[in-house]
Image (cartoon, rainbow, N blue to C red; front, side, top):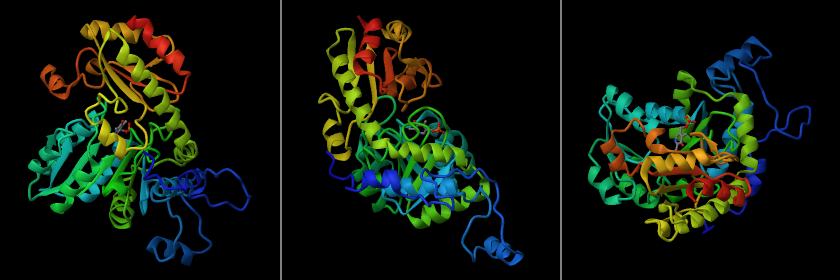
Length: 392
Ligand SMILES: *Cc1c(COP(=O)(O)O)cnc(C)c1O
């Protein structure tokens, strides 16, 4: 592990993208302004025409948002980044910019619920078809390819079962047919996984999660090359307007400064929690890529620089037993959010995955006894003691 994170990652996380203003401020400035003023009519005309560089309107560009975009692009190793109002806005903007009527998408079956809804309910209305395939089975992805396939979409590790997709293998399948691979890198962040270096064309983020890291702001981003992201996704964003606010961009860019330290601490705590759960007699099964029992443990070891902060486990006794574990907690927050300094706990079958039918849940591996914990930064002994209350 640790082989594909560049040596200057920590420096870029703290420094990339900052342009110090005329006040000499040390921390990055926030520019809460909707528009920008010009010295003359001629300058305004040149800015609008795009012949002179500079800001016009914050739906298009904003200095604080640009600092965040340049910093995240540097960390992901991409030429361009477009920041968006939420993670879902990043996925929507990517699809609207790069897909057209008649195109076909192959998507992992294990992606975020709203991503499934966006593809199934909305893209199909505009003549874009989608097939869902098992996340960890490259042969199923290859078999789903059609001449019209334009985009492969994966999220790895997945929520809540932490299935790991083979990014290199999916990139090869996509590129052999002239399609693009997009990877939702929400669970790992560039501190643990850099999909572009593994062959992906686009990286999607919900900055709402680990990039913020303290559960404050909604935001998202698309990272990739100068043409598709810097021109096409940006053109959609500036036209349609799901842009990131300067205040949120500032929160996220400060989050990037401590991202790697936080992710290491999340990984350390999560591994301890997973190992403890695995030994507990009331627990039937633990899903965590850091455990040798995880089906893609070896792949996660070469593809990731840490196993992440999300642990799921099946409690013996179904929904009643799982709810007992959730309800017995006093420290861990009962909430659907993840990637926070505060540990959170959810019962997927009755919350995040409640929209699925019982059959779909069985197919997706969402057992009634399944509990998901986003392991936070509290003392790990306290997190374990809190889970023990409902399990012992
Ligand atoms: C939360 C999440 C999203 C959506 O992000 P929002 O910021 O809530 O719009 C997308 N993908 C994954 C993996 C997520 O966890």
